[in-house]
Image (cartoon, rainbow, N blue to C red):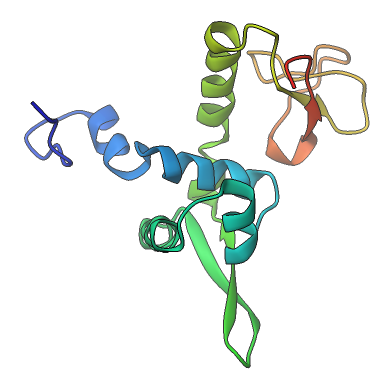
Length: 149
C-alpha cells in the first residue's frame, strides 16, 4: 500500500517537513543550491533531472520560501534561484544526512568531505572544525573530494 502524499491527520513536525523536502529531487536541488548552483540550466546539468521535474521542484521550493527567484536578465526574462534564510536552515539537516550516508552507504569512504574554508580541517558531527575547533556554518565550508570519489 502506498503512503499518502500529505499527512494532515498526523500532528507531527517530521511528517509536515517531509511533505515539503521529503522527495529525492527536492533534496538534491537544495544540495546543489548549497554548492552554489543558481540557474535552471545549471541545476539540470548538475542533477540530470527532467525539465518538468526540475520546474516543479524549483516552484515548490520557492512557494515554500526555501528558495527565492532573483531576476538576472530582462530579455528574455531569466531568474536565479537562491536559498532564503529558511533554506539555509536546512544546512545542518543536509550535513547530518550526508554524514549518515557516509557511515552506512559509502564503503570506499565519503565521496565528498566538507572542508573548513581556508583551513586544512573538516566539518565534525558537532559542526566544528576538526583542526582548529571553530564553529562552522554553510558560509565557512567548501566541498572537497573524499576518498570514495
